[in-house]
Image (cartoon, rainbow, N blue to C red; front, side, top):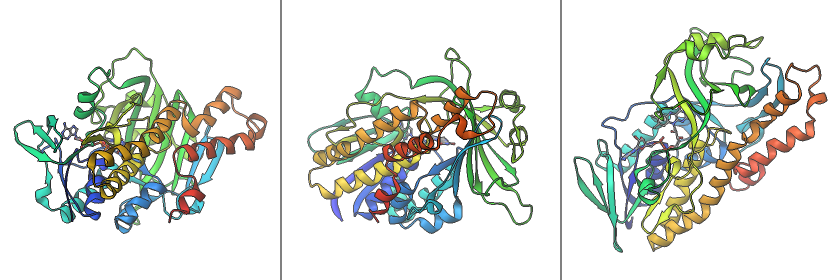
Length: 410
Ligand SMILES: Cc1cc2nc3c(=O)[nH]c(=O)nc-3n(C[C@H](O)[C@H](O)[C@H](O)COP(=O)(O)OP(=O)(O)OC[C@H]3O[C@@H](n4cnc5c(N)ncnc54)[C@H](O)[C@@H]3O)c2cc1C
């Protein structure tokens, strides 16, 4: 074991994967989470093949396969449910690793169990909200509300979009920028649609519906658990609470999708039969010039909160976790290690943040809406195959999951 101690702030996906990566490389790590109890919060998220590669290295492949659904295709449709683009994903697309759709809560609990089992229960501390910290040339002292201080060699801040550590270094940064668009998120037990492992998007930038299964059809009733997101522009002046757990009701969402009865998916019925529905504004932050500040570094949503376009939020946090851990294992000087981590990851993720503001690969839905708002007879009269392919492959290259390059890493 390397004689280096790391404190990770936040037990979300980013913080917990960092703890597991550090443990694998023989670096001692303590995780500090503000919540008194870690509960399976959130709804669905997607993990792309490059992130699954890192989780496979951690030996989590079988558990992920049991907890999630291996997504087989991604399909875009117009607002009438007519196909625009469909591509295979994960193993079906020839990647060496699958893509998983999974409940964020199940994923977080899976990581938590592993972190406790591998790092030790006495290394995962709940009820520890970081308030402030100080650092000198020898280390960092973390100060928690109502808990003793903790001295460590390195502090990794994985404390999410409202990061205390980021605020320390960027005290004048405004609230996360609100796009005028709201995400209503829910899950519904319903029959599987299309391939049974399809992730679909329908509509266009200002009114979009996303759905994908996060649990396969149960043999007893044939119903899968479908995660869905209604993404609607409601205007820039509405003050929006930036709380992942804020609830809303069916009526708020339903009238935006009232007529979306597709032959292969009944959107109104999915919304009406949902469990809890959550409201979250579509927000991100401008990329910052630095994440590494001597012995302190930002990671995951604390470093690069982005629109959840192209399934990248959690996946990029996992790539950060692998990168920072590898850098700490390689460099004897922790300051140089964190700088190397920043050099490897900051520019790449900044490009994704900015590309997601331009709708990432989903822009083809807007192109079709602009050119054929009343629908179309033949897709290729509206958009060429070459345009569709160009958009898809450009985004994969930006987000780092170009298949051949990724497979070459195995
Ligand atoms: C409750 C919740 C629900 C979410 N639901 C979804 C969802 O349904 N779909 C989706 O795509 N994304 C969701 N996200 C965001 C998603 O988890 C992230 O975009 C992505 O996984 C990157 O994770 P992260 O670990 O960097 O950040 P997060 O997942 O935000 O985790 C940050 C962690 O840090 C903790 N924390 C915050 N401040 C402090 C502090 N001062 N001291 C100690 N700990 C602190 C938080 O409690 C949290 O556990 C949710 C996030 C949260 C917090």
